[in-house]
Image (tube, rainbow, N blue to C red):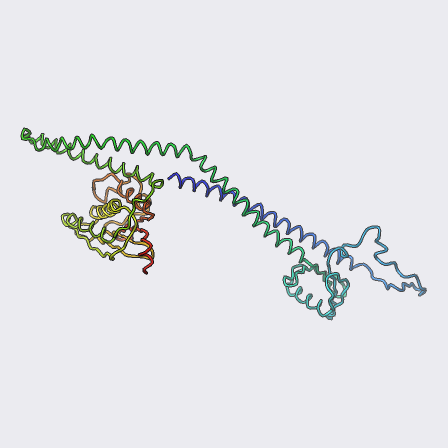
Length: 437
C-alpha cells in the first residue's frame, strides 16, 4: 500500500510538472515563431512599399525642354548615411505581374531566377487566394499588393529557410531540455515521495505489527478455551440441556474468533510479503492442486444441494507455496458454494493462456453490481444482505488477493449482468511450461 501511495504521489507530481513544462516550452516556441513571422512580414511590406517609389531612367530625366540632366545618384549613395535598405539586409524577391500575365522581376536577393521560375511561384501564391502565406516546398513566405490602377499585382517573397531551421532546432532543444528536466524532477519526486510517506509508512508498520502481535497472542488463549470446551463436552457431569447449549454456543463463538484471528494474522503477514524473500516457493502442479480442492468441496456442495463441474487442463506448473495456493482455491470454492443459487452448478476451469495459468470459478446467482465489483476485495466488506445470510468476516477475498499478489498474479471479479458471476485468477507459469506453447 505504501508503495502504491508513493507512486501515486510521484505520478501526480510528474503530471503537474510535465503540464507546466509543455506550456512553457510551447509558449516559447510560438512566441519565437510569431516574432519571426512578424519580422518577415514587416520586411515584405517594406519591400513592397519601396517598390512603389517612382522609377526614373538612370540616364536621363527631362522636363518640357527635354534638356539632359546628370544621371541620378544610385540608391546606395543616397542612403549611405542611413545604412542599406531593409530588402538589402533581408533575402527578399519582388516581382510584378501585369494584367496580361507578364512577369517582371523588380528585386531579387534570394535566387538567380528568371521570369518563368518567378511566374511559377506567383501561380502557387495566387492559388492560395490570400494576401499572404507560405510556400512550404520552396521555404518562402509571400505577400502581394494588388492595389495598382493598371491591374498589375506585385508579389514579395522572403526566404524563411533560416527561420524554419531555427524553429526546428528549437523543437529539438525543447525535447532535450524537457527530457533532462523531467529526469531531474523524477529523481526529486521519488525522494520527496519517500520523505512525505515516511510517517505514514511508520504508522502502517506499527499498525500491522500490532495486528500481527495481537492475533498471535489471541491464538493461545483461544486454543486453551477450545480445548477445555472439548473436555467439558466429554464430561459426564454435565447433563443439563441448557448447560450443553451454552457450551455449544461458547464453542461456536470461540471457533469463529479463532478463525478471525488466523485471518487477521494471515493478512498482517501478507502486507509485509513484498519485503520477504520467496526462496521457499517451489514448482508445483497447479492443476492437481485445484483438482484436489474440488474433490474436497464436492461433498460440501452436494450437502447444499449444488454440484461442481470442473474442466482442468493437466500439468500446469506454477512457482509458489502449496499451502497458500490451496488456501486461495479453497476461498474461491467456498464462496462459490455459499453464494450460488440452489440446485445450480459451480463451474471451475483451469487453462493456459499464453504464459499464465488461468483459474476461474463461475457461479449462478444475482449479478454483482458495479459498486460491489469495486469493493469486493476490501477487508471486512460484505455483499448486499439480500443475497442471503452467509456467515463470514469479509476477509476471504482480501486474503485471496494478497496470495495472488505474493505470487505475482492477479485476481478479478466480473459478471455477465444476467445471472453469472466469475472470479478469475491469473498466475505466471514456470518458464519451462510457458515455453512449451
